[in-house]
Image (tube, rainbow, N blue to C red; front, side):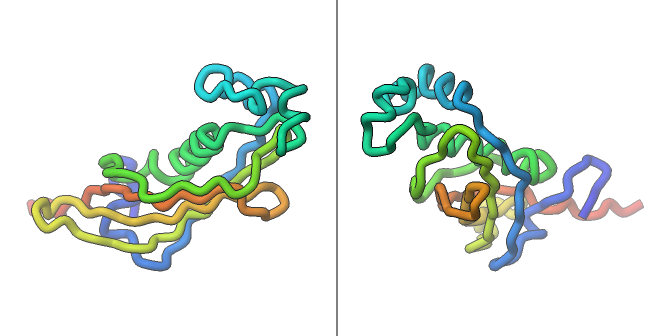
Length: 158
């Protein structure tokens, strides 16, 4: 699947049922608080006492932080080496279990649907299920999202 451009994944390379794995990432309390302070400053994300008094029993990562970490894992493992043309959107996000300081998450991607574009034959759209788990194998979040990918270029004739 490799080409001279460094792209290893084109639209043509995806099949329904295909599974891709990412690496993992451990999150620290400082990262949780820094992200939440800037983007989601709810008390249980930024304050020890408020977190302890909450239904979570401690500081937890914002769901948006969890999604951001998932995105980074997917980019590092796969998207940075693909003919990605962005995403037309997310269909669903679920935050299943709080992510806490010291948790290590990884993501599994499953191809659910592969649709060639009817109007632009140089690309297609893929429906992916992203499943993030912690170090205990417990699910922490899922995303059902669409990705647009370029097709493999036709070989040039000499």
